[in-house]
Length: 502
Image (tube, rainbow, N blue to C red; front, side, top):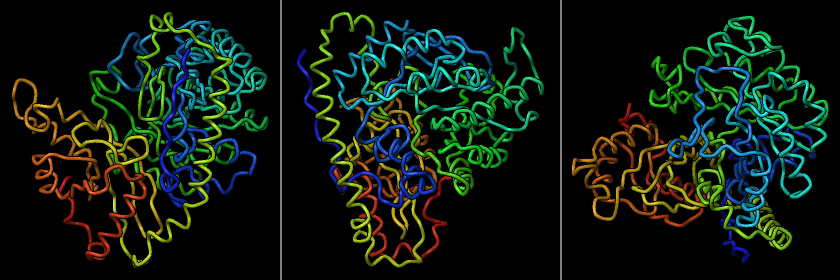
């Protein structure tokens, strides 16, 4: 097959600044060099690397051995973007075929993970057969595994055997009383257990598995779902415990609890955290260990760069029509990888100097500012009306750091009604109101273009639209706007009236 031409990643001035991202070199300074070398180019662990490298998940693990109140696994579903959702369930042979096709078509794809839609270790034969074949046929791809941890200790030897050097464990609590509010039941040793007893066993297995993995030199990231009123305060203790036991990264994610997803929490109207609540908790946990802030809570069959999903290009019926020459693709993949690594290294080497230059003249006591960015491929490249998510950055005299992302409904419905009307000719104010609410706390929104109607309503809500930095690397643009605000005297006064959104 004809191999694709890969466009350059963001320029060396792009990517995250040296002080910025949740998994920056500073945030991981406590780690040995050997570990930092493993994760610095991993798109799921390194915030700047995710602009350059892609990942994919294969859905080979349908069964699960626990029930979570925030989970509802859905199959043959293309309309939801959250964990546990897939469009096609694959057998190992089908999964390997799909991986080889993606690797040949998207040569910057460097990471393969199995994360569901159930639990990979509740489906060990399917999971490890997939890994075994990929170790032989695609040795240049990093292999990752995500698990709830219930049966993790009994599979550590097999994980090490297949050179799986990155494992994610979802740990939502270390207190069984809290766990009983999150997990209705577990299936353990041929019995269905409930309540505090079930939570206690799950927690013990998770902690044992974590210790066994780290003793083998296998990197462990811990995911935690923030559930307001249930474990939000408790997650500070979770962060301390998992760091003490060797986890290198903590990813505190917001609960997704829309009623239409059919989860228990959704049906019971359990509130999800606000962006401000999530950020505050991440900041508090971040005092104890490196925090991940760029997680997209991917589907179990996601393909492509973080924030995009190209899975629809690689369905089983389309794979049947592809002629994959993986041997030829290997050479292209190697060339692409070397090129991207050079760009990433140049960006990292130049980031400290660029940052100092960018912040010259900004008083050290200037207040921090949150900015939302309609980003695409590492640059301010999206029209406001076309954005399905906004990246939120904090700019301060110390530099720029990614604080997270906020998903929104699509505002623009086509060339003739973008920003003017909704379905059936009705005003699209409700969608814009939702977007404005989602951008709560942000003082600026950077985008490639924006229409007159949303501009006016954003300004009225205290959020200043800015289209002057289209196609610039995101962090460079954020720093430029911060300097502009400083020059205009907007960083000394309190920001209490700059954003009117509750």
